[in-house]
Image 1 (tube, protein in one colour):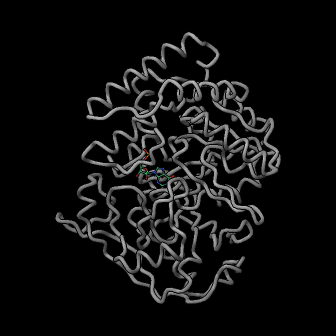
Image 2: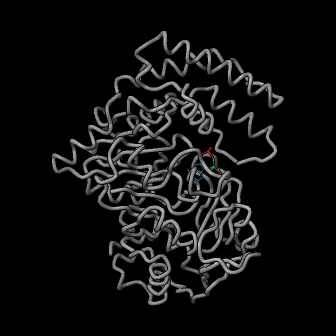
Image 3: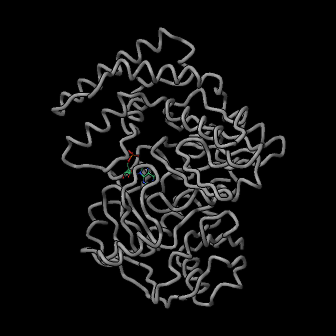
Length: 420
Ligand code: IMP
């Protein structure tokens, strides 16, 4: 089973994965890196996981980071140690693909210098994601398997630093700080990674052969996918369900279900168009109600109405078999709720998500407005117990996306979930 985000990330995948992880044996991440921030509440504790899959909070589950992930060894080490310090038994439960690429300090610094200097800013998380995937596609990256070969590491790192310095200079900047010392620190952290190195694809396929269930956990969302998102305002990996196969080392026929996570409204952090964006007052109101601040960067997220054009597109691109709607409770106090069903564009009415991001930027949503339920939903555990207007809202999402709603999250806690 794959769990993917269907908007611009921050859909609440961490919570859904946490709920579903109870039913599976293995949870694997297949793309992205420390740009992700999956917030999970277990009991009274809040955990924000950037690299280790959310399944780690369930005792005994094996958690893998696939070949499609870019790994920041220092951040990984910190996250691992923090989990252990907070009483989570992590030993023997985490595996890292031998083929995963390492995010090095020069990638991170270059990401930050680029964002400072280029005219068209993407609004990245500054975690070195773009430069690391560039190095991977350029066939000069450093992989986990290289760590056992010091000569190889030295030459790849020397070339990487020199290239990043040249690029920063071409942008009119420089890599700040003591880069060699930072690289040494990263390589020391990398040494520790060697004990986690594994063949993730082999582990997953063997687990399935043994009758075990595997969950592939996506990071970011469909509209941030390198191919299918709002390019160039995207992340540098394949966030969609197709990426789950390449990014974990299995064939697509092994995947039996794709659960798409949508928030009951829309948010976006970073630059690029958000067609259903609210006016400032409503934007602020929803941000407060939903706690819409980035889990990785703390940046305020822009908020807007549910965009069914995007969600229907996500259903198609990912081949969704079901939807998980999150944060329904955030809308509890609103008297009316709108859904964008199509866009008005200079070329006429559009029912499909445009390929051209500038065209999307000019798109004006065509809304359908439904009555709100103006009642608390946080204690509801059965669909039938939701107010009729809330059920109508969910039915409309289901109709417009042509995808059955299988789960509805009505709060941050594990138990605040309706399984349909
Ligand atoms: P990068 O992934 O750091 O290169 O950032 C590229 C774009 O993806 C920016 O708009 C980021 O704000 C966005 N992005 C990256 N990771 C996340 C995430 O986990 N949630 C939401 N947006 C993200």
